[in-house]
Amino acid sequence: MPKYRPNFPQKGGQKGGQMGMMQQIQKLQEQLVQTQEQLAQETVDYSAGGGAIKVVMSGDQRCQSVVIDPELLKDVDVEMLQDLVLTAVNGALDASRALASERLGPLSGGLPF
View (cartoon, rainbow, N blue to C red):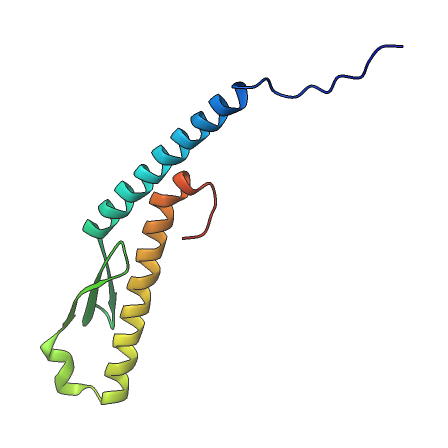
């Protein structure tokens, strides 16, 4: 009767595979860091109130600027202004997240960022 011999990797073969995987992980990590740095330099903008309020957000979700048309302040009440600012900020955040997802998606293999 033949002896059963499991098909285990040979000594040294497993180390080579692990080293290759570690190199791939390190390369992926470097690409992620580089992409995140690039995202910090990219911006998206979002307008609300027909362009009366404009918010600029970086790709790493940092608000860069909020511009309010002075003409809007003549005829607007506080609640309306607050709603418009909130709408513009949330729209800019959504656009920034979409940009980050677009850039990081191919690198992350579907992992959420």
